[in-house]
Structures are given as C-alpha cells and as structure tokens.
Image (tube, rainbow, N blue to C red; front, side, top):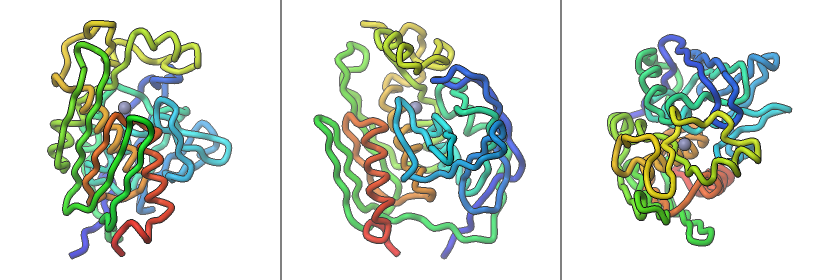
Amino acid sequence: MSERKYTLAAPARFSGVGAHTGKFVRVVLEPSDVGRVVFRRRDLDSLVVAVDPARSGARNCTLLSGEGACVRTVEHLLAALLMCGIDSAEVELDGEEVPILDGSALPLVRIIREAGKSPLADSRRVLVLAKPLALEEGPASIVLEPSGGFEISYSIEYRHPLIGEQRVSFRLDEDTFRTQIAPARTFGFLKDAEKLRAKGLALGSSLENTVVLDDERVVNPPLRFPDEFVRHKVLDLVGDLALLGAPLRTRVSAVRAGHDLHLRAVRALHENKAEFFQA
Ligand SMILES: [Zn+2]
C-alpha cells in the first residue's frame, strides 16, 4: 500500500531572530507540489537552496549552501516538517537563518499543524534501511540498523552536575515527537558564550531561546524535562536525518554525537542510497 505525499493545506508564517546571526527573519511556509522541501531566499532574488546532504555543513548548527547563498539553522524546522508528515513545501525566508523562536521545535509543530495538510498525487517513498552503518569519532559514535519503525536512542555525557549522563530511547511518530522531543530547547554553557560570540556565532542567543547553564545550575529555569538536554540532541538528529528528504525506517543509536557526526552518517547514506536502502 503506497502512501501519498503531503503538503501544507495553507501557508504558515513565523518570524524572529536567528540564534547565530542575531538578525530578524520572516518565514513563510508555502504549500508546494514539487514533492520535497526547498528553501527560497526572497532577499536574494528568490534564489533556491535545495535540501541536499551533499551541500550541508555543521557550524554549531546545520546549514545548506546553494549557488552563492546559504540557509542556516535548518534542523528544527526540517525535523518538524518531517515528523508532521509534510513532504513538500517551499520555505521562503527574507534572510539567512531560520529563526530560533523559543529554541525548540514546538512553535513550529504548532504552526504546521494549524496550517493542516493536503495530499499530493505523488506517492511517498519511505527509506527503509537494508544494512547497518556505524561511524565513530573519538568517544562519539552513531550506528544505524534496520528496523520496522523509526527509533532513536541517544546518550550524552557532560562534566556538569546537572547533566552528567543522560540517555533516552524513543520510537518516534508524530505524537511522540510533538509531546516528548519537539519541546526540548537548545542549551548552552555560559563559559562558551564569549568564545562563540568571538567567532561570530550565537549572536542571537538569549535566555529566551536557550537553556543556559553556568558551572552548577540552569541560569533560566525551569527545565521542560529533567533530561531536556539529551532530548534536544534527539531533535537535532531528527532534523539532520530529514536532509535525506523522506521518512526513515531505522534504529539509530547515537553516543555523544553532534551535527558533524550526524551529517557524516547522512552523507554516507545519501551517497550510497541504492546500497543502504530497500528498493
Ligand atoms: Zn538544536
């Protein structure tokens, strides 16, 4: 039985500052029948930036580069679109970075669900992993294995009294994503803030869009979950896997990973799609 692809039933709008650029950007999610998600820079003659693992990069966020332009911090939006079942949409922006909003994907999920979805004529391809992939980088690792569903286990370890070791495991569908993962916010350490700003990053980060930790505690409580940190890592991973452009059937186990390692896995799968996924 083949499922249909879906687009949005109506345009959806949001705006706000980018976490890294600090610039205010307006975004419109437009219904589209092209069958995939594309970004369009309205401030640059409507230049299209495709969702393409080969053109993705990690710089404390996930970015996509096109012909002379890029779109930054796409991961929370791509995760929300994927998990709300939207295959096809045009994301129009009048700037470079997707607004960070409250640091989570919850506002995005709300906006997308309010717009509603509408079926397209095309059928949806689900990427069913046929053979495992394992990558390592020092203490970090990511392993993908065949599975009948979309499952993610993630574990992190920080030398911080409030985080320490955190581990979660979810079988993800729209509801689990919306209630357990989407609300988890971006987090950062006060001691890193100066370093990031010196590199021109985190210029839009604030206590309104980032869970900030000093050496002992959360500067801006309360947390939404005691393990909000590792749940946010799951959100980032879902967003990075969404670069593959289709829903996945796989079990992913990530340990102390980050955008760099997520993207290495995504590129390895993308470059060998015929080998890794069932026809
Ligand atoms: Zn994130």
